[in-house]
Length: 117
Length: 119
Image 1 (spheres, each protein chain N blue to C red):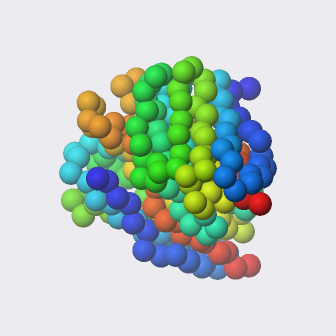
Image 2 (image 1 turned 90 degrees about the horizontal axis):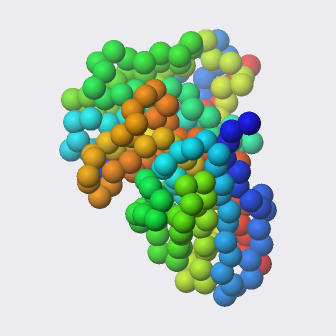
């Protein structure tokens, strides 16, 4: 079955550590996104990528880094520079808009809950 | 930059009644996509409905319909015959289609509206 897989589901980080959240999709989507969701809040865009080897900062990129070496994968690293990383992180993917078609919406993974201990 | 605003942090409705969730957005683009997503307690994001800005006809999906007012930059969601399973957080989202622009493909969400359905 096609879909988006985020791992791990729960992640604990010690202060000062970098951690990497995995996001893999087998939907053959060009576009991928990372969002942060705080309790009772909306989704804030961290980074997004429309094509391999290219990505753009979202609205809250500070303290985060990404790579897009493969179409299927878009890992997110939460660095020690992110002062308040405890949150729920969602990864999404979508077709490239240039391909047109009805499926322009984003498909989401199950999320990763990151907690600083 | 595009922004999406949901001015109703919480809404409630009686089962079988109708409720409307509001969404406004700010953009200088003429073509874009708008979406409503539902996030139940499981936190899995589920697409409810989509609207292409170049289409004047309002989108409908069973009990869900939108009122798309392009000039007013408004995109409200109407849920008819509300069911207990509709209880969730609802997000409005905007996707830019500005090909070649620095924000091409950017997908921006509003703050969300928590919908409670009373039996």
